[in-house]
Each structure stands twice: as structure tokens, then as C-alpha cells.
Image (cartoon, rainbow, N blue to C red; front, side, top):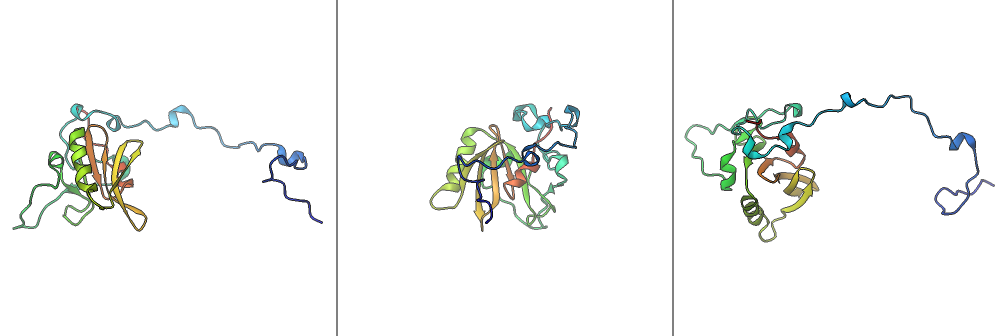
Length: 175
């Protein structure tokens, strides 16, 4: 008869086997302090301490993403952005067209952010907020996946095509 399984039963005494109870030793060296990446100061710098945002300076170089100013086709008429706060930031996309993935970084106040949230969450829109390590996200999901996302960092709004995409935007460099 096989021995009873006791690993998941509280207060059950498992047979002692020295080979099983000796913790494994690691053959890998612990990372040194110099191997730890340094956080980009733009992740925490206030908007007031930065140069003007452009498509050339808002993305994290480590992300590998490049964005370009959106060039509308000749004869197109462009209206103002949905939210006035976003007019302070560049209109960027991955391919330079209105059809590409849209990214921006714009200085914003709590009042600006509250207006964005109120507009997008009105009624049964599917938009919702959640807290994260960099601030408050305003997003929605399609088929269980995050879609267009706004991130309020306390003094700026980042817009990206997905919640994970906001990690690629760190804002312009310090002045």
C-alpha cells in the first residue's frame, strides 16, 4: 500500500528524509548593486521641471518604441483634441498617421484629470479607474485585454494604446 499523502494536510507529520529537507544551494551569484538598473529621473520629475514635450522626447529610449508627429492627409481638417488638457502635449503615433498607435504626454492638474475621468466614465461606458505604481489609470478592456489607457501621474497625463503601453512613455527630459 502506498504511503499516505500528507503535504497538504495540516499537522500531518511527513517522513524525515535528509535529502529532501536540505535546502538547495544556489550556483548563481547574487546581482551586485552596480548591475541594478537606475530609474530614469523623468519617471518622477515634476512637469514644471521639464522641457516642452515633443514626439522626439516623450518616449523611454529603453522601450524601443519610436513615435512621430501625426501628419494628416492633405486637405484634412483637424479639430481640437477631445480633452483640452491633451492640447498641451504632442500628437504622436507609431507610424505618423492618425491610424497608428497614439501616444502623448501632457502636463495636467487634478482638475484636468477629473474632467477626463468624468467624461469617459459617464453612464455605462465601460471605462474604469485603478491605482498603479505610477499613478491612476483610466482604461477599459476589450475581450479581457486592456485597451486605450490614460495615466495620471499627479501632474501629467499619459495616453497610450494599452495600459502596458504607458510604460513606454516617460515624458520629456528635465530642463
